[in-house]
Amino acid sequence: MRAFELLTEAKLQPGELFVPKHLDWRPQAFLQKLKDRTPFVQKIGGEEFIPAPGEYKRLKPEVEAAVKARLENPSASVPSFIIKTDKGDIPLSQFEKADLQTSKGQATTTVNVQPIGIGVAADAVDKDVDVETEIKQAIANNKAIQGANLHKIILDNQILDQAGPLGVAIKKATSDIVAGQSPIVKTYDKKTQSVIAIDAGEYLGILQMVHNTANFPKKDAFMKFLETNNLDNMMVIFPGSQNSQLQDSYGVQNTATGHSIMISSKGGVGSTAVGAAPALSGLKVPDSLVKKRKPGNGIDFILTMQGLSVKQQPFAGMNFLHRFYPDSVPDMYKKILPFTFEDMQIILDNISGKGGNLPAKYNKILQSRNVKARARAGGILFYATAKDLVEVFNNLQPVPDFRQTVLEILDMNFVQIFSRVVGGNLNADVLWPGKVDGNVLLWTKAEAANPSSAGFSFKVVD
Image 1 (cartoon, helix red, strand yellow):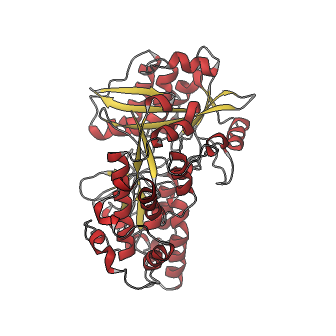
Image 2: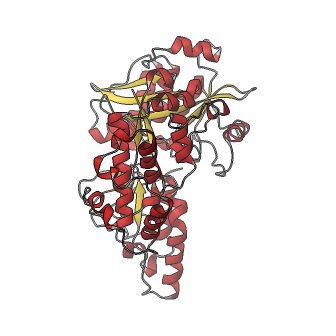
Image 3: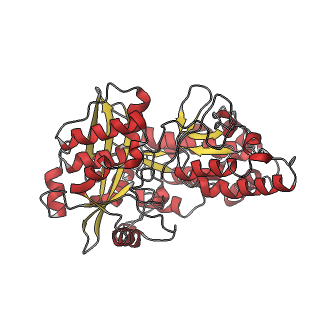
């Protein structure tokens, strides 16, 4: 996949996207950016934002409907888009627009250098396909990369050749790793360093693990677990779709049995940089742990959250604390808890615009957060409760076995690779198994204006 940024100094207004005489290519160019997940550039500051997985599928019907409306009536109104990105929801109008003078525009060398962007990812699969089938399909379609050959795939990649200095930097880092050295990236600007660590880090981190340039304290135990002496024969699979919320890639050590490990690649600039948080909904709780469910323990909390809609989670979570750990409940909630079924129905109706005003008993919570986005009172209450619940979890750790439970679920088959620029070098720190090395934080990207956009997540940090 080759994806160029087409930029000028003007803003990317929705109206410019649907100018009647350019309907044959402009909307499709916009959708292609969403599909390839190439960066949008913010008008002020020049910061890049990567479209979130699923934005192409979400916005495609709206774009096509707007095109159809404009073909029938050149003056028809067009939608105002909010794009979900790796850094939050951003209005389309805040981005620089493509050079809309010609269909070619002015091509720069900003290329999506993630596995899916440089064409090394497996074919996309249907969202209902399980992990085992996804891996088998990737192997059958020759989309699995042998550990010993990963560096060759990167060095021979033609799309990286289109990425200008960034592509050169990634290939230089690859050569350094193969030579047994930590790549020196201090000569590049901060944006380039960040892209190398975050986007290219998805494969460079694995490469460092394979070629022994990563900080991997428990590698000997890991090798014993895999029953191997090296990782040259490990088959690496980069998913072509975002079905799983836990791993960025699979490492298949035994293609005959399908024995695989999940590899989560997190990157950034700085010694404590971490990546996106996997959702609680992405945790598959094994039967052996389900049997250990007891009222108030970590398994009970996770299963409770998984059985609810995103909009219900914050209120049910606060009820959970109220029932089992009342001393941890923030003072302004103590007089109104629990949220009853009727309470939650009133709140959900308000969020959807079907209900009336919320009871006055919620006013103190509503006023506790400075929400600038246009949102209904129910959405603000959702947002405030979600944020307060996260703060309680991370500051007080009320559920004693929550961390242990999350890490036990991940167990021995989960590897976390942190690709980070520290001291001008690209370092890779490998954590395995998670239940020994990781610290777990509850996390949320709750939005008052869009309560159903993000459920609770967790972050595994070292």
